[in-house]
Length: 187
Image (cartoon, rainbow, N blue to C red):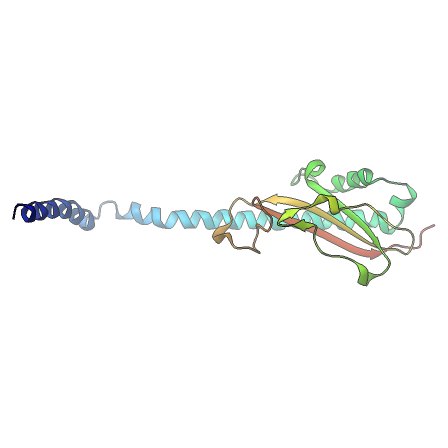
């Protein structure tokens, strides 16, 4: 009997504050705001990050198109440019959004035909593999692929789904710009 009475007393003590909390309306607006603000702010950050990544991707595409012309017309080949000299030309096209010297990777490959072009990204087990990159601008009439890569950090990855913005291990998104063309018959 004594334990039943103490159990009833305990229930009364616990239910009184919970009941008052459930009936209280003074802080309802603050609680509702806290519940809505967190996902709203996460959504705003995700939208901003997505916009920045699309802007970065477009910047990389523009740089790839511009520097590819240097190989297409034979300027890089007749000037005997090295991979480092070609990368300097890439970095001159990219202004403020990238740390070009340490984070932008350049891959230039020459092929016998358009059907032989390998478009697979150099990713091994979710990691970017820069050892697969090369610099072979080819000669007159060669089929050439110029690719620029950048590992962009993803800060807000809602739902953490594969295939969305963070497609590399470590919370990075691999941005790639690819241009495939046939070199002009320069002399």
